[in-house]
Image (cartoon, rainbow, N blue to C red; front, top):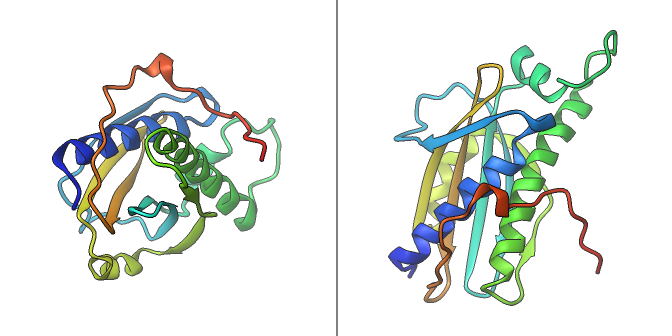
Length: 184
């Protein structure tokens, strides 16, 4: 079971991680709840997980491998630079997901010992039809508007294996850091 305050805390952490992880080259990001993702046209997903003994959190980014999305993820290339290959493009999208998930992992580690994070997996959107099989106690969708008019979507899905209860206050944007390496 996931308490209401834990659901609100997971939500605050996800919004914060999207704000920091999706800013390619300092681009502005606006995030709002999405009512339904049934009609979106994004065809691919980046899926990452943060797991502990008590829960499995999935951070999911939806994207289209179209010209606008490729341009956003290549926005700071030098003039005349070649177009991104498919592998380079998928790597950049996956790395944004990785930064988002790393932020979640770091922040959740303050409340839960033994959290671990997966590597990004890129799959087809049709796979989301099976998310209900995971028994998620929390599913929340987000609309992510990026600088230059690009809109992407994200989902937060949390399956609990025990009672999950913690609290995170509102996160000020200046309290968030990105790009730090953890050494093990």
